[in-house]
Amino acid sequence: MQENKDKSIEDLVDDAKGFLEARVEYTRLYLVEKVSKVFADLVTSTVVIVCFILAFLFGSVTLALYLSDLLGSYAGGFGCVSLFYIILALGVYLTKDKYIEKAIINVAIRRYFDKLADKEEDEKV
Image (tube, rainbow, N blue to C red; front, side):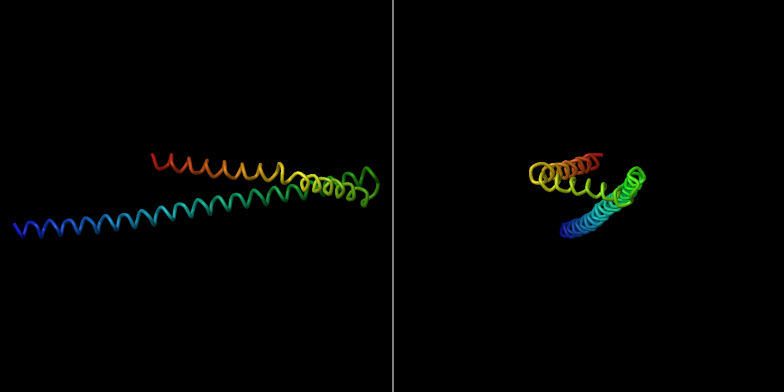
């Protein structure tokens, strides 16, 4: 009887060790997956932002050169584009507290909860 209890306790300890090792491995893999997703999101977002910035800059230069050709003066064309950006910056500055910051916060929260919902769907499967 005593031998049976010792063997049962040894099996229980072995099972607990196996469970603990499996849990540690699961946690490690889970963290690797999360870090990989964050890194991939960061890289793709950075590439998209850089592409938009380049398109914006080249579009601005193109517009300035076009206006320069219409006005017959490089200073006039680039000045018109600069004036447009100054007016745009003032508009953003004056409306940022009321509209822009709220919109950015809402987009960020929505994106977070969409990713959270995707995570829950992945865990169900």
